[in-house]
Length: 111
Image (cartoon, rainbow, N blue to C red):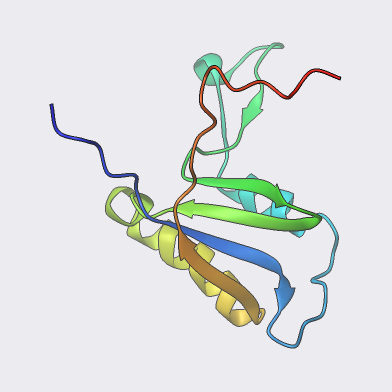
């Protein structure tokens, strides 16, 4: 079985090229909300809004970021361009990388 190569991701950081913190403070949730959908059938009182697995908010240290999975480019090119253009239009710093998932057995050290 061949090793799976993780998808490349783009990290949009909540800091401008000038080094200023981007506002409003909930910008990451708002941007990801545009790309979200309703889960579990999409109707009814127990329906929950779910972030897309391709565009999700994360915290890196004390910095809000949005992670975009490059596979979104193949699935929905206009959505991919929308998110990257948001970063460019607002002068946000962006980095290409890939997330490394936590190992299932990793636990914090006992106190």
